Length: 198
Ligand code: HEM
Ligand code: HEM
Image (cartoon, rainbow, N blue to C red; front, side):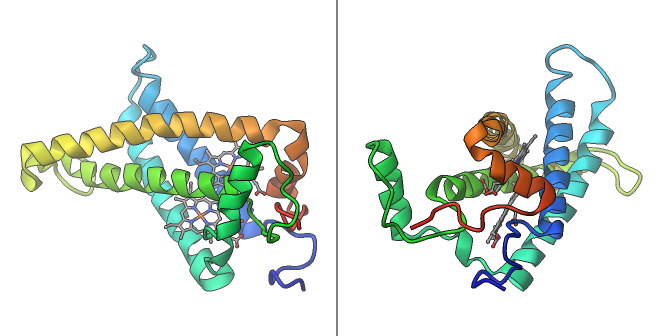
């Protein structure tokens, strides 16, 4: 066992890889069902959209269980060397001598930006369920005053658009050849334990 508490050479355990890909499939389905009708492909998108949202809620709860019961939150928290790393990369200087870390400054920034955006979109989406008829309940828009509904719809829409941008950026960086070992680690498990070496 390494001091990261995992078998040496395993970057992402099976459960965490499962979470990543289930969550990613949900984000694609949610984005597809949200944006395709807007650009002209009309279909009965809402049932697929909200059921996928429910699967995403379950996946996020599973991730939170993994974080708080298994991993601990420490490796994803920002530290002073993340700021130094960002400045040094921006100035095109060497990043040698920084504290080693499983996730570098850019991965942490991506994680927290994506997490906050996904959570804001999911929470507003769950509240918006009060506006539709389902097998389980009847719609009740009187739950909230009209201006509050407006704010909720704006957050949901802005979150969805920001996610589109973030996901394109994330996939681009995942596919570039110098990041190949991270891609295989998210598929097969094995990979570098440290993204930032000293
Ligand atoms: C407040 C909520 C969240 C907390 C506290 C949290 C915390 C963490 C932590 C601590 C890790 C690192 C685990 C480790 O390797 O030691 C991690 C990894 C990860 N998180 Fe989150 N996260 C949150 C929400 C999210 C959300 C909403 C998403 C979906 C976009 C997400 C996606 C990921 C992914 C894909 C990984 C890498 C897989 C892994 O190795 O665990 N997280 N998260
Ligand atoms: C085809 C689609 C995708 C590919 C190829 C992909 C690839 C990857 C890879 C290779 C990693 C591991 C990086 C590492 O080991 O540190 C990763 C981590 C992560 N992914 Fe994805 N991903 C995809 C979709 C998504 C989606 C849709 C989201 C949610 C918005 C997401 C959120 C995350 C987060 C938060 C992490 C942890 C932070 C990080 O390590 O960069 N991914 N992804």
